[in-house]
Length: 230
Ligand code: FPP
Image 1: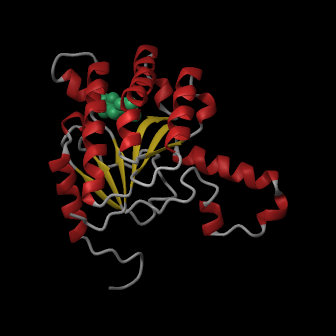
Image 2: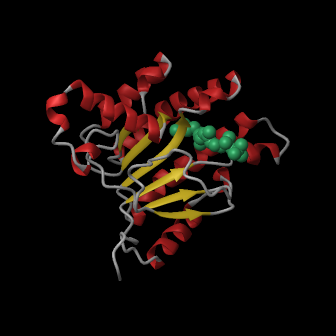
Image 3: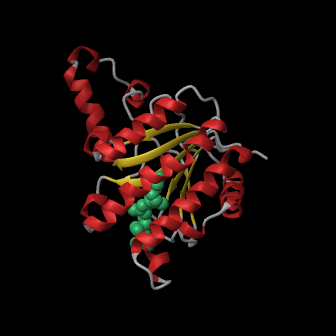
């Protein structure tokens, strides 16, 4: 079944509330969030999704308590180590969005190994955003332009897009935000100019294939005009 959403972006929100509502510490919710991610990555190709971008750690998340930051970094390493066999077998290509220079060396090692191993895969592109901020991404692109002023005059929307972390990817068709919040929270700001936004009160650890189908069904009902008339 395909719904016409080639690129789906997800803000994986609500892990903390999910844990607290169970009387557990927040990292418990992040662990459950990884399980939700596993489910969604498995389901995505069968639903016609070609690119799946997930917000795992924002440039603002460094302000969280050090133990929580540590857990998120550990979970990234664990996820990549435990899933790489299956993801590679399923032809998933793993890429990372964000400024990886600030990531701890143990994460960078795993990230480099996962992207190198899956670089030639032809299936789902899984873009994991870590130390990612939409504004930071735009600033990094502008800095690159300033390093080579001769090309600055040739910059247009298309060439600017190629300087972003999502170079080569289509813009997201659908941005999903669980947990009832109605914000983009600095995720894919440039790329989401015409994305449809789907919000649901379901917390990310409870998100599953049925929820993803619901979001895609809603997406199909939308009338996308890209600023023009019907
Ligand atoms: C927001 O929930 C979620 C995050 C800051 C991290 C998302 C990370 C994961 C799902 C797991 C790690 C990812 C990988 C790729 C291994 P929140 O803590 O802000 O929830 P709250 O709004 O209820 O407090």
